[in-house]
Amino acid sequence: MTNGRRILPDSISQRTRAVHGGSRRSQYGEVSEAIFLTQGFVYDSAEAAEARFIEAGEDEFVYARYGNPTVAMFEDRIAALEGTEDAFATASGMAAVNGALTSMLKADDHVVSSRALFGSCLYILEEVLTRYGVEVTFVDGTDLDQWRAAIRPDTKAVFFESLSNPTLEVIDLRAVSDMAHAVGALVIADNVFATPVLQRSADLGADVIVYSATKHIDGQGRCLGGVICGTRPFIRKVVEPYLKHTGGALSPFNAWVMLKSLETMDLRVRAQAETAGRVAGALASLPGLTRVIYPFRPDHPQHDLARAQMQAGGTVVSFEVAGGRDAAFRLLNALRIVLISNNLGDAKSIITHPATTTHQRLSEDKRAALGISDGLLRLSVGLEDADDLIADLTQAATAMQDGGPPR
Ligand SMILES: *Cc1c(COP(=O)(O)O)cnc(C)c1O
Image 1 (tube, rainbow, N blue to C red):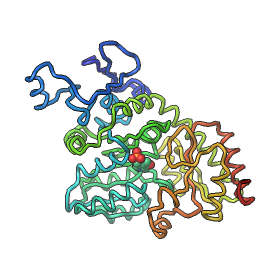
Image 2 (tube, helix red, strand yellow):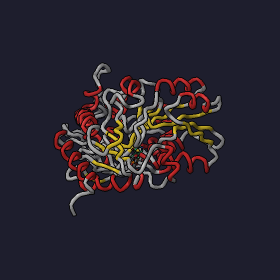
Image 3 (tube, rainbow, N blue to C red):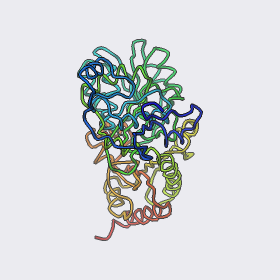
Image 4 (cartoon, rainbow, N blue to C red):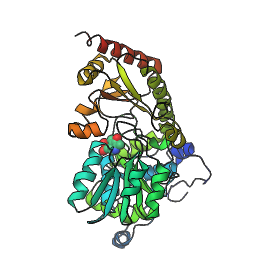
């Protein structure tokens, strides 16, 4: 131990890293990691303060916007289990997406991005970066020919959601990364839907992996947070200077919640994915449903790629009902266990109607191009009993067919 910091053998597995990685123990020898709910740090002398501002050493802190021991524990633990050299924690997933892109880009740079993105990601690429003179080319992320045509010798970065929201398109990480690396472009993957448990994105070629920790990392719907994982030079020389001065820091309290949640994330995500697979199978035979989208189902257009890239099909199932918005609303209003909300990755199952909520901002044409019809629903499967969820969805689909729930 140095400075209370545990040094773990290199050979330990991802699950062990998720429990012990990054721990720093105070003089009290606590088992459960401490929350250092402090903005500042006291120096022994004026000389010590001066020295720390010239260069903070390993595990030396200056101000919580720059770093904090609890936040550092979370960063080290997620980096250890993700398999990257380092990580920088942020106040939300969007601060992570924005921080990863904005910290490395400048006017006249070129970025290629898949088009099927979460609304706020699309806003950053389409409206924020372009306002500062960054050129962004959008492609159909499932079409390698479009990536090949769009990536140019001067392309600085490619961006995508490895499993897209809400239509669950799968990006071929290896192929896209090879094309990007051939021109020296950085591969930035938003891996929220695939999760750190089910997909080893760094091994597949991603240089930078961003998460909304709000989702599966917290996993119980409490705190907002985000994290950027990457090489030490990228995190400390590119991301950190940008984020520490622009203020997207993660609160130490939220970092503590996320840190402790990483200990159970593997179990939670695997259980949720197993239930999601069963729910997807049951949905396929329900009345009034025209399509079930789940990456591990044989009828998913990229089923083989999903199976090659991911250890399970994920925790989200999307499906389409006949009868558009009215039918979708009838189904939602008849549910008794599944909650109508717009988060995902929670222990509680949550269902969303993207066209009227998360993707409401987009024009009808854009939604249509992304496959977000008025009958599309996105179900985030939680930790409830699979049979209870299937029964709830079955009675809701029946009520939808019968004209809606009794009022
Ligand atoms: C939720 C989400 C984000 C944004 O995360 P916040 O924590 O809500 O800021 C970014 N990307 C994807 C794919 C998401 O699902």
